[in-house]
Every structure is written in structure tokens, then in C-alpha cells.
Image (cartoon, rainbow, N blue to C red; front, side):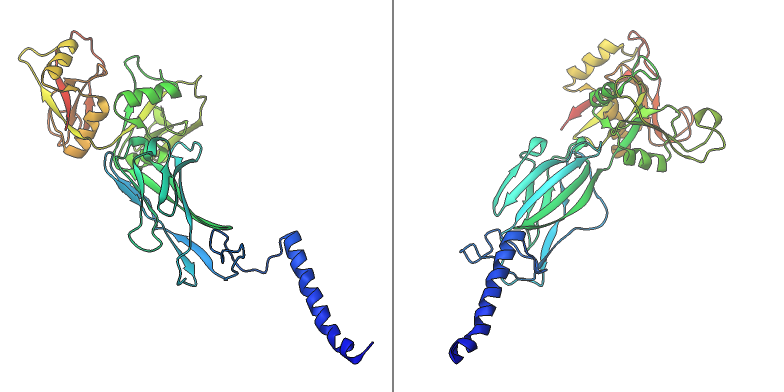
Amino acid sequence: MTREMMNALPLLVTVLQLQLLSFLAAAVGYSNGFFYQDNGNGNGEKEIYFNGVRLHVETTEGPVFAVRGSSATLPCHYRYEPELSIPRRTRVKWSWLPADRGHETDVLVALGQLHRSFGDFKGRVRLRRSMPGEVSLVIAKLQLNDTGRYRCKVIDGLEDESITIDLALRGVVFPYQPSGGRYHLNFGMAQKACEEQDSALATFDQLFSAWEEGLDWCNAGWLADGTVQYPITMPRKACGGADMAPGIRNYGARHRHAHHYDAFCFSSSLKGHVYFLQQPHGLNFTEATQICEGDGAKIAKVGQLYAAWRFMGLDRCDAGWLADGSVRYPIAHPRPNCGPPEPGVRSFGFPYYHHRHGVYCYISH
């Protein structure tokens, strides 16, 4: 072997080592510890830049609060560390886990300026990009069932990061039982009963907030997640025991078809207003419905009366028919001869339809 060949041996070994490393990387997915992306962010020749950049996705702490019919913005921002001088191409996906803890579903997917929305969110959602890295979700015309946990995921090639943020509606929780009396509703019937009264089954968080505000009710009712619970602020023997601390009594998850309870419904703000009508000799139920319709309105639902009491301060010491055949009246400022000393919606139950009362009507704006 000549001297020139001896001198070339180290270089040949080095080349062979590099080729071997390249082969192993392709065969077993070798990683050198750097973060890299392959979403149109290479050099156009299918080569990936190993740039040591980390993707971060961030939001604000705590839930976002809103009311029905309004818009809400769920904040989401992403950034790179270290900061990049050239923008990168990313994909954004927003998804939603309902308050009843059902399946997580897609809300919106965006790639650059292109986006697509899904399901009940179609046409109601968009991305806000008011600054670099912002991909906040704007939801318009909020509905009662929009509450829950939302996930913002930013995808850059092989890397993705996500955050979650809760959306909660401000509203009022009320116990509901139909004209048949106590404990006549299975889960599906409870859902329908609340919907018929312009409301939705309450979530645990909504019931807990109502309990913190003083709701005390000794009948167990369905919640949106399929559990059966009831709130007690004044412990007593018939309501879980006099020796128990105040709190939410929990029966746990019950059979959604076989078991029957009451319901806890949740209503939020109105796009119209509730008002009272009366005739000198009162109105039976049929006449009450007709007089509202003749006034260009409809007979009010229970959820609408509660919302008007809670959000508009409706205060009337006159009993009136509602759409479900019950007779109730709202008191925002307690006074003698108008029921208990606490504010609330008083109920006379479900009288015979020929009884004569006033009526609460609802007209939308």
C-alpha cells in the first residue's frame, strides 16, 4: 500500500461512518434531540431544517363568561422559542368537549386563511388574528348548550401543542317538575322538559354556583352529565340528614331510562321581554294563551320568567299562567303578602285550566 493510500484511509472511514449514520437514521427514526417541523417549512427539496425551535401555545387563566345570544372570544396564542424571524406555516384546530362530558367534537380547522367550521358551530365561529400568533376563537350567537371545555391545538409539521379553556354562561338554575308531580322524568324526558321551557339541563358547575348563591331544594334532579343531585343550604332530617354539612347531595350516575327524578334546568338572558296582563275577572288557561297572541306575543315559558326575574329584575306580586300550565310570579324585592322573605319565583303549581289568573307573556325583540 502506498503512502498516499495510507493517508486517505482516515477520510474514507469518516465518509463510511457518515453514510452508516444516515442509513440508521432513515431506518430507525434517529433523533438528535432537536425539535423540527415538516409542514412546508423546509427548503423546497424535502429537506427538513433542524432548528432547535420549540412551539408554545398559551391562553389566559380561568373560564370565559358570557350570556346567551352574545359573542364570546376564547383566547389562544402561539409562539416559538427562540423567536423566529420568518413566519412558519401552521394548522389550527379548535374542538369542544360538551358540559355533559360527551364526545369531543371538531369546531373549526384552519390552514392559513382557509378555514372550515362544523356542526352547530357552522357559520357562528371564526378565528381572530389581531396580532402575530393569535388564533383566538370567536363564537357568535351563543346557545345554552355551548358551555363546556374548548381545546386549541396548533400543529407545525411533526410537532403540536394545545391548551384548553372553559366557556361558561351566566344564568339562573331552577328546579322543575311537570304537572304529573314529583319524580316523573327519566333523563331524556328531563332534557325535553327543560328545552320546552326555553332552558337546558344544568351542569354541575351551574348547580354549584346556584347553591353558593343560596339555592336550597330537597328534591333530587337530573343534571346534564346524567347524574342526579340536589343542593342543600339548610341541612335537615328529610334532606340527607340534619347532621350533614350544607352542600350538593349526590346520587351519582343513574340509569337514564329506568330511573325517574325531577330536573334542574338552566336559563340565560333573553332577546325579548316578559310582561304581565290581566283582566278584571281573570283568565282561564285558554283565554290567557289567546290574549298574549292577540297582543303579538306568546304565553311565557318557565325559563323565560326566571331569566326576566334574574336579568331584568322583573318583580310582580300577581300570579299568572305560564306555557306549561303552571301559575307563578316573580319577586325581586321581597315584601309582606308576596311570599317568603327571599327573592325568587313563587309557584302555585298546576291548577285546573278553568281557574282564573293573570298571564305572563313573552315578546321577542
